[in-house]
Length: 241
Image (cartoon, rainbow, N blue to C red):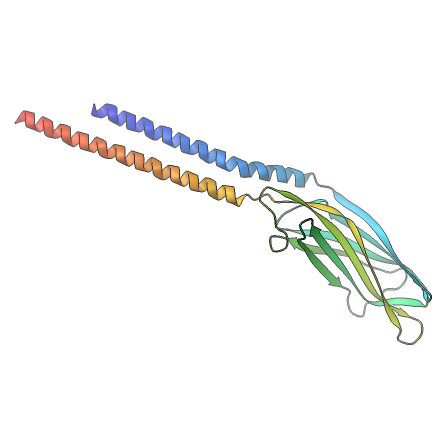
């Protein structure tokens, strides 16, 4: 009778162990499947390359700039988004002579209003004339929870825009200068959130509960067997007397 009970206890322990392994593998497969999907999307991403022109005309002359850019169309959440930009001064005519101070602003905004802005400024004292250029520039901004709100496993789309501003100096009157400034939307990116920390923590909690429960069952079963053995030993001792 005692040996049969021990065999049953071993069988229950094996079944519980197999159940724990099954739930553990199931709980870990969901986040991994999300990450695998995201990684496949990121590995298949393409790079968008294009350009646009900004033209400014007034009675004193014409200025024109060509902005060439490229960026990946898919990025992973909690990584840096980088746009490579080069600004060409394609025309400075009339009284317009050169640019002294200039800068570029990269903006990324999602449909929910969250976003981030990064601005870079040209080197002080570095003039730009017709035919010259500024760049290539690698403008990087972090895409994380401080600026963009995302649920684990989701994908959102964000709009990208570039703004160029330059301080143009004129031939006359003396010390006369005026700013050229223009903004263009250059496209969209997909932001993928791959980490599913919530379900991962929940799975660990379930697994820990099952392990504790299994340990409790085994402990109770062992205690019952010990009591049975003591009772049988007491009975056997009484018979011998």
